[in-house]
Image 1: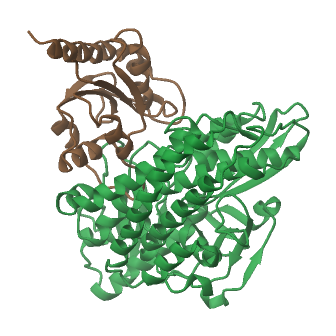
Image 2 (image 1 turned 90 degrees about the vertical axis):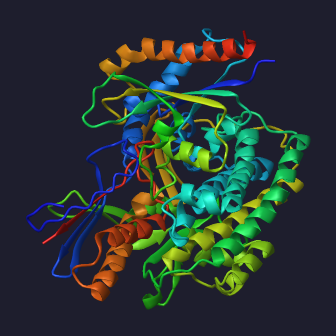
Image 3 (image 1 turned 60 degrees about the horizontal axis):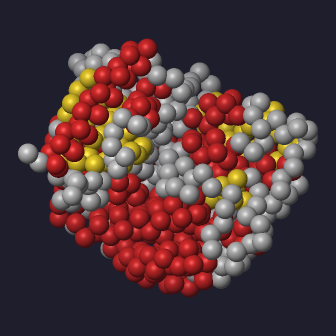
Length: 448
Length: 159
């Protein structure tokens, strides 16, 4: 705080990076006039890094963008390259991909729910405080995460940055006997995951409504993870109408723009603010949840997903994530039970001069890749639009609403510590990729 | 019977100097007993807890961002000192070693012996190159880690 009436709140989260403002708020006369969240930039670096490389390289290179969701990057990259080359991967290889992806969902969601998000609802500063008096819950979260990790280790070849994934499939596929120990762990994880749904469902949730359009893949008959067509559900005030567009048209619909005279960016679908991630998936794919996951959702107060229930309180995203963990565990068990090894671990993918786009559901939302190839497979264009970049405008709006509501109640002297926590919570609801491996969330607040 | 010794290089080789931990682990290959576990980690706590499960001695090598920075300056920290670094993050992507150590302490999962060797870094922008100052510190940092491993084995053999 300084003495010119311009107050600066700084939250230096890990002491690792100084002076990086990740969230900037401007407040004038009891109104929030500007919210600016600075987020995920690595894809720009990787896009440039990819040009001139071979068409088989994107899965490996882009998996290094993110230590939390390497599989998502691999899967979207594979799909885009395979589309460009006119190849379809289906059958057991496709099922194994989905199994690998389930492992990542389990890991990523378990981490966010138990270690990051839950402390917000239980009045703890962080998971360390939580571990002191709810040790069993934290241990349960770690166990669930380990089950996901075991899938990555088995199928991906190692727990971080899986090396067994290639364009067209895998380098090596497991024998059914190798997957059996996974099934045992997953059955334990199912009990843990259901307990976690009950645990988070009992939290107190602040009243909040997000009125964004919702964007997720839609694959009628199943909860879309690694397949489906981009679908937009209009916001409640627009009547929740559902429309789809082909992934090849993604960049015509989803656009990132620059705010004039600012470094701020916006993201829109067909000109409107939107959200991707668990709330969007639940709204669009909820009717295809596994019966056990659907029942958990109903019991957790999320409405009846079979009848198209929509959860529009962003704070309840923790419940949706918990339900998605159950879904991913059930899905993984189903795949393992029905698994018969494919005759070949991968389909041959020969290059040709073409472009292709692919999209899958990363844990935090739709992840889009597009590549253009020369005849020999050399990459001439690369475009990556991660979910957090798409969610930026929606997250900023959630923060603005939360702070504005607080200012309306408490007036201009609202406690800064409380406002900081509120901002963090509004951001944390969406588990954003702030920036991989450079650890910061600095909040600055200008008040005049 | 010697206890398990685990060396973990924490960091991201694609973030400039943040790659120093993994670089030290590379440099240790061939310089430590064969049954020493050499691992790299992005700092995600659940995986770190898994890595040192059952270990008697854990040697962690990490990058340290300080302000003002003296790039290349070396530090050897106890778990308590390393855990004292601030925490709290909105994202699964923001966890670091400090959080992990504090969590491990709360869960009673700190290994019997854990030491952190760290170097103050200059640049963690995207890129695969270590800065000059940090590259110059690599040999001594590697020596310190190797010495910690030697001590662990010497202790296990006993007097």
